[in-house]
Amino acid sequence: MSASELADRVAEALTVDTEAFNDRAREEAEALKSAVRDGTFDNTEAIVGMELELYAVDDQTDALQRVPRQLLELIGFEKELGLHNAEMQTSPQPLNTHGLAAQRNELKASLMPAQQRVRNEGIRLVSDGMWTVPPAGETAREYLCDCVEQSGVRIGTNMSDSVRYHTMANTDYPSAFEIDAPHVSLQAETVMPESLITSIQPHYQIPHAPDLPEYFSYALRIAAPLLALGVNSPFFPPDLYDDAPDPEIVAGANMENRIGVFESVLNPPDSDSTPPKVCFPPDFDSVEDAIDDIVADDTIVPVDLQSGTRFDDDFVHFRHKHGSYWRWVRPVFEGATRSAANARIEFRPLAAQPTVDDAIGFAAVFAGLMESLPRLEHPIRSLDWETAKKNFYTAARNGLRAKIEWITADGATTTSTQEIYGELFEHAREGLEQRGLSAEEAHSYIRPLRERVDRRLTPARWKHDYVRRRVEENVPLAEAIWGMQATYIRHQEETLLDGSFVDWFE
Image (cartoon, rainbow, N blue to C red; front, top):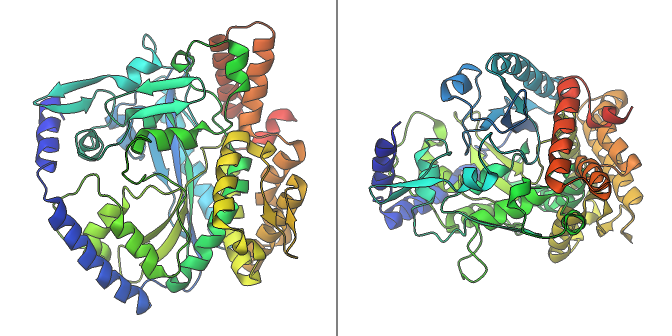
């Protein structure tokens, strides 16, 4: 699509009547509530799914690489925000022995031929929390901020040609379009800086939709320990750093910068009173409250929509609102057919992981906990919401070294890392065995994450230790970061499909 055609479509999107759109969404939400009460969104069993984002690099230099759109379609991956991004989704499967195996096998079955195909074009797909090596001949700042104005419409030069993404840069919603992180400051005119980061998103479908608030409360309270376990983006591309001593930059690094990037780019600046869209969400008293919270959320890009042939097209405006309901844990209501209609929880704090087995390990642990904690009526649900939120942002800063407050099964409060994760893994195992997995199968999914705790080593800490050592040897920060990135990619090349992060140290 040419820039002029894209600008015309963006300009057309900007003419949509926001109030009329929101009125339709509110009407659909009332019908959705009725369908939920009638049992339409219930499932006979728990269902799991996964989204996996990657970025592309030059196979020889590790520099960020734009992926030709035709090549992306050829390998069966979906477009994401940046021209360097790719996304795949697994088919929803029952949470049981075969369902989890199918999730893992589907990821591997798709990634293997995709990697082989893009290698023919000199490209490698990387699973990582944040890229650090900009395209050859460009700085990261140039790549992220480059845009043009066409007929009064701002068009991000390196963004996918999705009208939605470009319209977000031209609406009245006051997204800051900035990065505000330790020793990093960047101001753009589009959402493109968000393309720095990539994630995995495990899904868990609730068997009985009205029970969503209970499951959701537990998901909020395990968000911090799972985030701390999965941190994977301590460093930015070096040219984004302000002028500060290298050791100071290294010492001040957050373990998971993905959290801050997503929030500071898409939320309004602190000086604006508009509520943030990317945030740690509240507890809900009822499933109707969850639906109402989505309806009340600001719509950045309203669209003139018509019902199609899907069952949930009866809620098409509500579904569209949900697309920019960017909470770190969020409820979703959808289904292509009445029989497939579901209420699910998307768990969004996790950065993309070093290997497929690490990603599936998180999906299994999350699902196992969703099974066991409500059944046990675990007292962690009574943890104060403000404490759960504080835990979350502490985990983003410090990873496994974060001081997280937890309530144990016997009601005691603890901040012991060993005690917290010992209990988490045990309850995850119980939940998986409850769904028919053998003890050995459950342990096989949990083991790669348990070993991270035993070693006190996350992907972010591995990266940070590498760069810290090199800087202490008087290696310039940029060289240290790029050396780390090259080593990460080489390790991943050997283990992405057949191994885990802890295999890097065997």
